Structure formats: C-alpha cells, structure tokens
Length: 70
Image 1 (tube, rainbow, N blue to C red):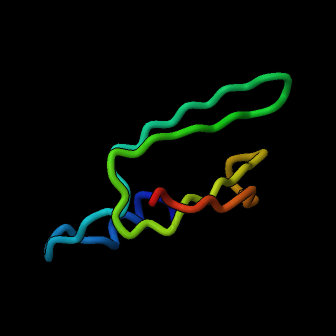
Image 2 (cartoon, one colour):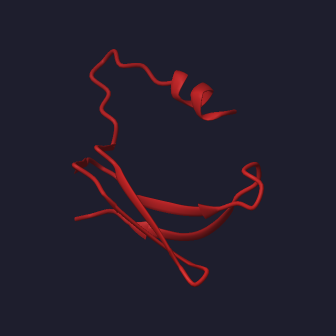
C-alpha cells in the first residue's frame, strides 16, 4: 500500500482529526552525519515519531522511535 492508498482509507466525515499538523522538517549533513530536526504546530494523541532510513527508497529500516511532545 502506498501513501496515497493509505490516506484514502480515512474519511473527513465524523470530525476525524489528524494527530499532527504543520510539520516542518530541517535536514543538515555534516561529515557524513545527518541531523534531522522538526517542528509541529500541534500534536493531538500522538505517540511519537519513527525515524526510518533507506538506501533504495523501497525498503526501510527503523533508526529510532522518539516520543511526542508533551
């Protein structure tokens, strides 16, 4: 299932609210190290963010699961 198909399974009827809005990403590379930072405008019942990496854009490995803002 691609991202588009995944999103189609959700409906806006019934007042469903996405858990994260206003995601802003910043990525910096320094000597082969990647620094990923982000900001969100709001988080509602969000468990956290799973950071993934891929060498081919098809298969992904989990790097870390970071908790949501409190």
